[in-house]
Image (cartoon, rainbow, N blue to C red; front, side, top):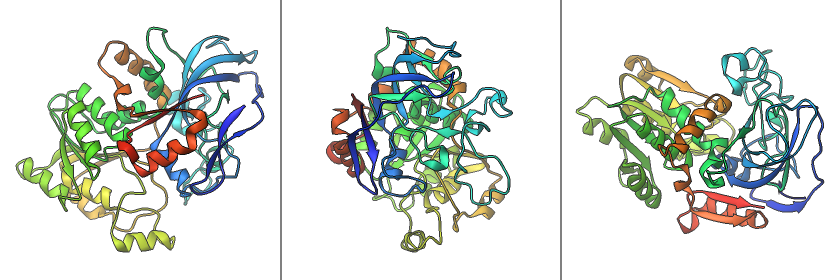
Length: 387
């Protein structure tokens, strides 16, 4: 089969690799009909994620048709059309029984990214996201082995096109969990840092949950223009406004927003000092976006972090967060817990995640898709690939 493989920083290639096979009785083999390049895939593409090996198959946003099912699979059958969550969970461990699927204790033979791990168990395995998270081959391929098929795959109705439901695999649940973690309710004010796919899905879900005012901060005008047209955000370009948090505080009567959502992650554009420290491995991430979230949020408010972080941050301003009595909620998405209700919202027309798509390409052209997405060429918002 054909699959996109990692060969090093900014070097990904579509190659011929062996077809996957059933390895456990609750596996399925999926024939992929649509897959996408995620913003977090760019962290891998830029060589920022450890635990990658040459030849690893990338991709964690995908869907398709069940080609083969192991003897213990009862949830789906051959011929079913399903979306696959990027988190691989067993469904019966301590965390899965709490609907905390991203913390599944049984699926990941890797160690996760935690530094001060002690003897704590690793988090769930993820498709196509390094050997820290299981080294499981991803979905930017013609065929995928999907473990734990009685827990993950979600059947979708034929009335909905692939593009309408594809993002149930990751960015839509991630945006929804971010909005829920932020405590969004009718009348809420929220600031979303980052107008990429997760930021836009957070805005869509915040609107669905009743947010009154959404500020969105980015430095790509075309992304801000899209978010304003699609979700009615108040755009703030941080190349033009040096201190977006101050703009937000002034616009909210000196109080700040009820919640901020940090949808950028550890490659946020920081200061020169932070760039040097990160290059020297003396700092794990830029803290600029988090500092802005802390500054923009009202006393007693919430900072929700769906953006991917690893390691340590020096300029966190924990004292400011304490003084303001802020609540922080963050982490990988418990995708399986929210997929059914989001599918219902799509079917009822309350969400239209496909609006984010700007580029449609063949899997054979995936390497070029990464270049376009990473370079923000041709006003790229989201790339969908079809085998």
